[in-house]
Length: 216
Image (cartoon, rainbow, N blue to C red; front, side, top):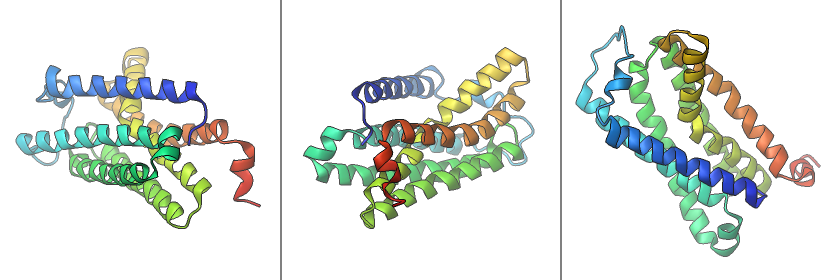
């Protein structure tokens, strides 16, 4: 689906680098998320740590599954040689996306940055499943080009956490803003940047003839 072996190879390497880093941080380096939880201040409801941690683990696992299954379904070779796998793997991606959104919905009220961050996360929890749902609707109507576009838009949100932490690092360490404020700003930045990047990828990877075919 995504054209260009070099682009896909880079995407695979970056994605597995993210999975390795996230797995190390959450399951080996700091399995109780103590470093992250230290930044949570002024919570309006008590944090039930055992429940929160289990939900976070589920969140992380399904986020990684979504990233891997999304990558696999962008493989042209798999699409052409094993359509059944492509279809089944697509449903795995959909389930993973909705599980990530569901678990994120539970954690949103406890977000670092309070209500402002919680609102942003809930917006993400609506946008990502919506775009994924549009991809399903498109393929059921056999609109292949629209399906590709919506899948690219949906897949971009697999990198939400990465972008949030990268932007937080830049604002906090580079500009000297407080961590909590930096984190909140970064969530809204991700809301803006990720869909823009998705549209750029669509323009780069899909030929003009394909991008305009549905308009004719």
